[in-house]
Length: 574
Image 1 (cartoon, rainbow, N blue to C red):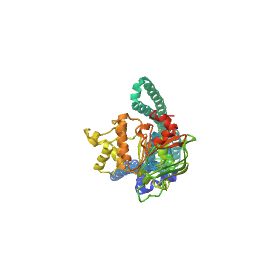
Image 2: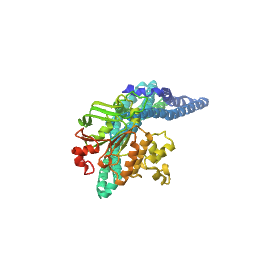
Image 3: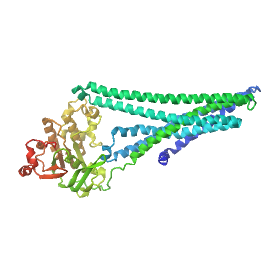
Image 4: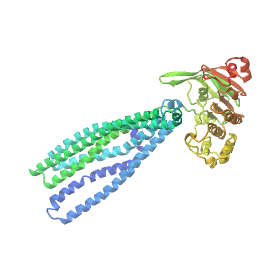
C-alpha cells in the first residue's frame, strides 16, 4: 500500500524534492538561534564586543529572511504538490468510475462515492503534502536540538529527552481518540444533511400528508444525536490539549529547575543555561507536529485504502472491434440468461431467451412488472454482462464490440429522463456535444419542442433548474427525444417513455417517437397497449421469457394473455 502511495509522487518528484530540501534547511536554521544567544550572553555582552554583537544580529536576520522565503515555498509549493497529487487521484478515480458496470452503482450509494471523491482525497492530499514534510522537519528539529543540548551537557539532555516519548505516546493516543470522535461527529452531520435533503426534496409530499410534525421529529432526533457526538468530540479535544499543555509546562519546569541546578553547581554557564531553555522551546512545536503526523498518517492512509478499494473493482469489459460501416440493427439473442446480484443472492430475470429482431423493424415488448422487459433493453447496450448465451448485432457479438462504438449506435429514451442543471440547449446538446446550432434547432423541431422554446423569454438559453424542476414531464420527454434525434443512432430503445404522461401529451410524444423510429430498429417497452398496436411485432414477456410473439392481430386471434388483457388498455402490474 505504501509503495502504491509513493508512486503518485513520481510526476511531481522535482517539486516534492525541493519542498523537502526547504524543510530540511528550515530545521537546520531553527538550531542556530540558541547557539548565537549563548555566545551573546557568555561572550559578546560581558566582553563588550559590539562588532560581534551586531554581526551576530545581522547574521540571524539573514537566517530569518532565508527561513521566511523557505517557509513561503513550503506553504505554497508544498501545498501545490498535495493538490496536484489529489487532482491526479481524482482524475483517475473519476475515469475509473465512468468505466464501472451498472451493477457497481446498484450496490454503492452516491453519497459514499462522493465522500471518497472529495473528503478522502482531501485527507490524502494533506498527507501527501504535510506527511513527509512535517515528519522530516519535526524529526530533524527534535534530534538536532537534542544533539546540540547533548554537546552542552549530556546528563541534562538525557533528563529532557525522557519527556519526549511520554509526550509523543500521550499525544498519539489522545489524538487518535479525538480523530475518532470528530469522525463520528462528521457522520452525524451527514445524517442531518441527509434528513434536511429528504425533507426539502419531499416538502410537497410532507405538506400533502400534513406530516410537518413528523418531519420535525426526525430532524430533532438527528440534531440531538449530533449534539451528543459533538460533546464527545469536545471532551476528547479538552483531554488532548490540556494534557499536551500540562506535559509542556512540566517539561519547561524540569528544564528550568534542572538547568538552574546544573548552572548553580557550575556544570553549565549562564549562556548554556539560556541555550537549554531555548532548545526546550524549540522542541515543543516539533513534538506536537510529530503527534499530528501520526494521526494524519492514519487518516490519510485510511482514505487511501478506501480510494484503492474502488480502483480494485474491475471496470466493465470492453471489446476491441469497431466495424467500418454503421450498424444496421439486426439484433439476435441466443439462449441468453441473466441474473441480478440481490444482496447475497442471485435473482434470475431472463432465462434461456432466444430472439431475433430484424433491422429497421419496430418491436414492442409488453408484460407485467418484473417480467424482464427493461432488463432485456439494458442488455443490448451491454449495461450488464449476461450470465450465459450470446447477443449479436449484425453478426457481431456485443462483447467483442468496443463500448463507445456500441453505445454510440444505440439511443435510449427512458421513462425517468435525467435533466442536467443548465439550459435547454445544454440538455439537447448532450445527445451530441459537437452539434451545430442549426442541428440543435432541427432536433428540437423533430421532437415538437421548438415552438415551445420560442415562447420562452430566453429561448434555448432558458435555465431548466436542478434535474429540470422547471419542466413538465412531457417537456422532459421531448428533450430526451431531441437528444436522440441529434445523436441519430440506427437502434432505438423506448423504455416506457410515455407511461407517466397524460393522454394529450402522450399522443404528441408518440408522434415524435414514430417520426424518430422511421428506418431504424426500434424496441418499445410499453404498459399502454394502444401505443404499440401498429408495431411490426409484439413480444409478451412473462416469467423471465417470451411467451407470445406476433403482430397485434395475430395475438388477438390467438386468444391468450395479450388478447385477455388488451381490452383493459394496459398491462396489469402482476
